[in-house]
Image 1: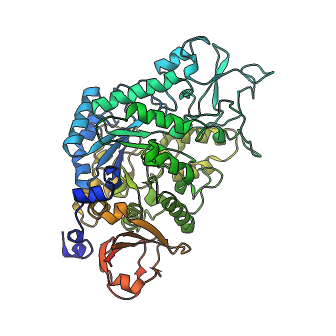
Image 2 (image 1 turned 30 degrees about the horizontal axis):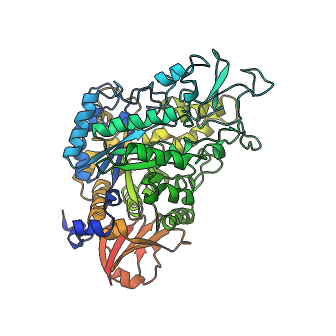
Image 3 (image 1 turned 90 degrees about the vertical axis):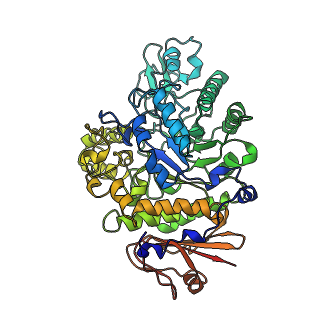
Length: 592
């Protein structure tokens, strides 16, 4: 490492996390000091040239993740699926889709992950199945089939005939456009699907459904996996009355979310799941529940260790701050709102429960294009955003390519998109003439999930080293300069900054276990907070702008003279007022 970077990265000053430290700070909950890396298999690495990522491709790239220093890999769905929603529509929970390989390939991947000292967490999608799952095939076969009650079936509204406009049992709107009910012509009843019509919702009121899910989870744990990320798990309990939702002026459908988000039996179901799947089992597991719409108070209950539900939740409040009435109504981010939101979650789970920390995942656009500057200041803004996120209290999640500073893609037309949500939104608004094609495309380019799903950029070769074939979705053309090979070779890259952030979490107990105190809540450009554990205090600063910004924190001059633990720009003054350069981040450390 050359002297320029050595000046602001000093790992030798950090205390090693010993076994005594683990005991002292509750490190039986090992995930508090861990960092999770999400892989979207379809877009990570293709080993056979068919243009789609696969399990052997992932195995071949594990050394990249080992060098980064992550502790856990979260694998998005690789189960058999018709791929209507890119694998989140599962037709067999105990197999591997041939697109991705075989169970033998999975076992080899798992063995190689464990050999490198990492853990592997599977995606658990049990709010719904594919309509091609044998359970649903049986369920729809007749109204008296034993599995009919495994899903939500209802007749048309009273006084209306099946198929009539508005005859759906409720007025709820699907997350993927259109109604949440699909008519099955053979039986004359509708089935509920909160997402695609090919993703019918399971009826968790039926104990047979729950036991089938738990048995499947035990099967994967017996195979050696280390836990589950649970897709929209707070939707599994629904108000059995299925009442209509509020329908605002001009809305095509009603809002059913009050009747299926954190429903009446959700805590009961999750506690039952824990008892049936994890209780008494040897191992160090991770459970994280994706929970749209969850509040701080609800999350405190879900993640309280004494309640034995889940270890942490994914909440969506902070990734909705740049949106108006819908995710397609894009607004500029007000940094004060971001600080208020994340600060509220830090305070709310300070005494009980735990936060998950993320900017990106397979459902979110690239953060450097969203909250940063993906042009002139791409590297600096990407590393600033990583610094601010990773120094919060909670478990950080890195989404594939985030450690490279990958950006949103330049989609030219609707034909360039693959995501069902994006394509359905375009059809729902352009075809009837509600908006022009260019208006809808402008929003899709900013917010589409496909921004996260373009192939991983490994090198500057054709198709970025992702595949030797034709990729299922186009590679971002900036892969010639934004790629893993270049980032690993450059000491000041986004990759190496993320590597240092991860090492910092592993070695400095204050990062994982310290308290959190927000500073400068009303500053429009500077994000500032402290972390303190006993006599160690850290000051974290990030400039969310392209201009110089003074950090008028309490005791600023004393902080400037303290140890600069990590920064994303060289030549930091060690005296005087703290003025952050465009998109600069700094972490100071002092003891008292």
